[in-house]
Length: 316
Figure 1: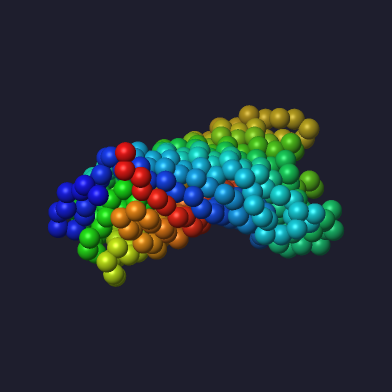
Figure 2: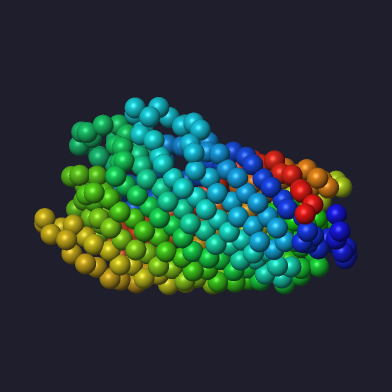
């Protein structure tokens, strides 16, 4: 590889194409958090998906990754339904700046802890399956890397650079995103809508978030060509909520503001050879949306992706 080495990081080789194929476990569980003043359990929705196929490519600073086809499910489809999703990600990894763009589309959820949620009421089924419940999640995150000579996200996140020795850096930047939630009825199961406030009666909503924060990222190089990535960031900011509430057989438009806390964690373990590379990676982004009114419900989401991939470098 034609790369210029500095103290800890090899820079990019713009004439080499990196291809990746692998298995992905994507999830965006959502939870309607019960009002602070209530004694109710949260409504926790998850998806029945175990493995999906994925493909990615990187060239220089630009890369993308997507997954579509479900290969297997964690639970029987007859009892938990089957989640369908499309996931597309682009990234631009400069030495001092990482820019991640993402689009995720999920449909099909089931309600965890169904019996606890119904609290003495006989549920229609266990668990309650919601094939009508949909989420869309898209946005962009910027991360300024303060010490690019000590840390490379391209080495552990894309395979287009190589970390020569262990090193880390502080990271800082903003995040912009929008989460859309929709259903044929309400987010809360039928008969429980009034217990969970406006978000429990939500039929369709847009949640636009702007957050700023930072953290620390570190690449450990225990052996030549092996790496371990540890990255944690915390971001805070406001969110604008625009949604329709189904109440008393009427659709009511709602607009309100909420405070947002977002945590981003990345872990990766892999090998970075001259021609072949592979990694086991987990990326988790948790967002907590708290209403300014303690008598109203909140919302929590988590975009979680675990994937294993094998890559090949092809000189152009």
